[in-house]
Amino acid sequence: MNIFDQIRSADRAKQRALASLHTELGYDSAQALAHAILEAAGSRSVGPWGVTPLPASKVAKSAGRGRGRRLSDATRDAIKAALKAGAKGTDVAKQFGVSYPTIHIIKTDLGLVKARAK
Image (tube, rainbow, N blue to C red; front, side, top):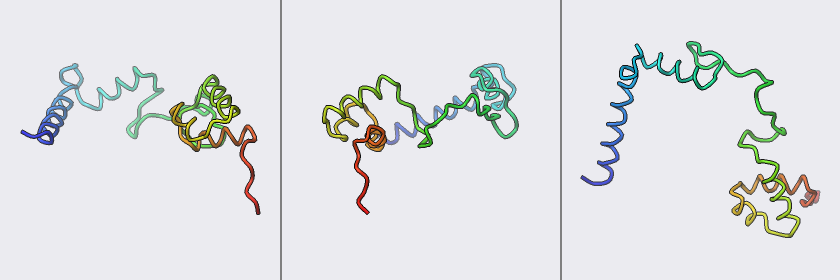
């Protein structure tokens, strides 16, 4: 059995285990189990079309850009210090595990990026 067969076999075994998980845990259906998991995770309610969205007051405010994870203030300050010290943006991105566009946004906020000539 090669590695691809092993992966497919493991995937089939996982699917079988998940298909019967609700009965093993004492629920009538997979939907009832999913409902219980979502309720335990703190979602407000679960309807036939999914989870009711959180109110706007509970959603993190973005700076008008993107929807990705937010950097902590300490990380942002460390990135700013590295950029002010003259480090290249690509090197800083690799060092802190963020994308170059994130670095570019921080550089723009610091005034380190020149506007395009028109």
